[in-house]
Amino acid sequence: MITEDQSEVISFLSSPATHGGGAVERIETHGSVLFLAASLAWKLKRAVKYDYMDFSTVDRRRAMCEAELRVNRRTAPAIYRRVVAITREADGLLALGGTGTAIDWVVEMIRFDQDQLLDRLAVRGALDVELMGPLASAIASFHDEAAPRHDHGGAAGMRWVVDGNGAAFEEHASVFDGDACRSLTSDARTAVETCATRLDRRRANGFVRECHGDLHLRNIVRLDGRPTLFDAIEFNDEIACIDVLYDLAFLLMDLWRRRLPRHANVVWNRYLEPMIDLDGVPLMPLFLSCRAAVRAKTSATAASLQRDSHRRREQESTARDYLTLAQLLLHPPPPALIAVGGFSGSGKSTLAQELAPAIGAAPGAVVIRSDEIRKRLCGIAPHERLGPEGYTDDVSRRVYQAVCERATAVVGNGHSAIADAVFADAADRAAIERAAVAIGVPFVGLWLDAPEARLVARVERRHLDVSDADAEVIRRQLSRSTGVITWSRIDAATDSDTVARKAGSVLGQRLPNEAIREPVGS
Image (tube, one colour):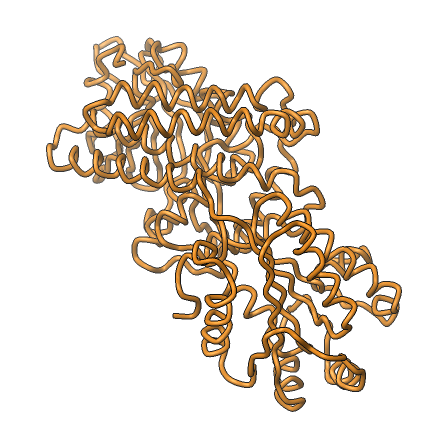
């Protein structure tokens, strides 16, 4: 595992004298040691060799430092500066970037405020859910620009992940329950084979790309108010060149484990919203479970490197928690289809966003919003205003057809969905109900009632909302007959928390117990 003694280099980089006399903070992981001094950070790769990581020689560590610089400048060019040699000078002393013989290598980075790391924000309860939308957009843009890799991923890539996790569980038999590990590994292998055709199809269609590979909260920092991805995997293409949804799954799993389901659901929905192809949705239980299993493995490895017994026991406990989560994520509850209707300003989108994190499999229901679909069909940005041409009967017919098609794609692939639309036309309500019946999943329709004055007041307060509704739109909606509404009607004139509790009560009565993880609006 450890191939060279780096104690001299670590001592040198830990010394304030090396950095002009200032204090040095040291952060250690199973693969690297980071030294924070003044305005800079220096990352040393440990001389280790695992089945998935090889930093065993000086030349190998130099190559990996250069690779790290390349892959991370894609998302964090302001952080990553250069690769620097640790040299032994003629007098026998070590130097940073000296003229002597290179005995090791480090990546020089700009130091940032560690308190702005998203994992630390989460621990403090300061991770704003409003940051999740921009984070999802940043990840989506990164994935869009990443190079496709048809030589990795697919079913073979996921078999490699599952086999590697299984081998690590055996290696750390003193940490894990053997029966639980064998059961998880067997179930994960079965899941891979069940999804093999889909996994390979996504690789063929370009969804396997040179991704981040280690996309959890500790590797994202709020820099200048924006989420910035850093510390991407450079040392193993099997880990980095993966399905984009498997890349995203690490972040979603991390948020889920930290009991931040709303954060995870916002990222999930914002990432999925522009995607026409929802073929990857059925893979999420496998992807999320494998991510938790990977963290179980790496936590056990980190525990084995701890010299402090208390810290070692903490890491071992964390590893076991991840194993339990991996088992739960691999066996999701059955899907359901929920529709939220009501006139503009009734609070449909707010309610859908409140309900989604608690419905169905992690990371919660996919919200299908007609306003977003309308803008996409008309070829304009979400917050760009549509003219009358976007609200003709023909366009509306296409919008509701797309809502049903997207709901069918999501629920038919085993994941819960919430359709958010006015649904003022009885035919549209009937169509979404028929979609659920055709697939054979539970359906609940919710209709939100509120007086005209309240509807108008709400739409007038909107800012940067995808909906174009105004007072005139509401008056037109109210002037048309809705027919008989058989959906559960909820008084939406009250505050959003009260509406969510009422809706949650209806869902609790109408859906199977396993479809709702916790009370809504509590």
